[in-house]
Figure 1 (cartoon, one colour):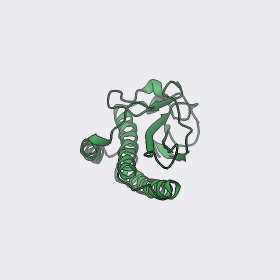
Figure 2 (spheres, rainbow, N blue to C red; figure 1 turned 120 degrees about the vertical axis):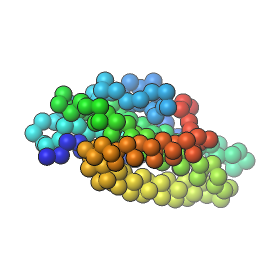
Figure 3 (cartoon, helix red, strand yellow; figure 1 turned 180 degrees about the vertical axis):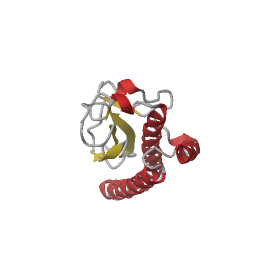
Figure 4 (cartoon, rainbow, N blue to C red; figure 1 turned 90 degrees about the horizontal axis):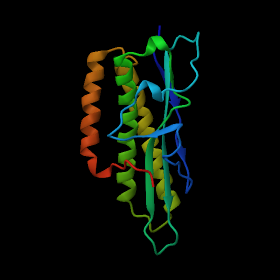
Length: 184
């Protein structure tokens, strides 16, 4: 029987429509705040063989008022509280660690995208550059997301889960210059 289901990989790209950090239904990734069970506010779905589901996404946008100004990119890893849920029997330390590592993987990919966008030459067509880098980033995220799920057996292999935790922490550290904990 499967314990966790993480099949909702939803990624949203907008031009200037950001998401405010004041919304109580979302959580922007922050090194100062880990996930807690109170963040799982979605309605439990019984009888499907899963004890929980998490919904994370990356929101990316850019602003370029005119061609004489530098393009400003914003990228955020988001946890949607209203779509993420956990049943009472699913609330284990291992499960919470698995969910957190998953959210951290989204932040790793948000930082990679920030880095790529900041280092890109966007004098030409910023829409083309943005979309190309965004699409590549989402492909890489999907690939890593699926590898993480498979290797950890959806969080059941605690030894492999700890290896992933270390790997993701190292990646976050190596991309420290590209963190962004406060939405603009």
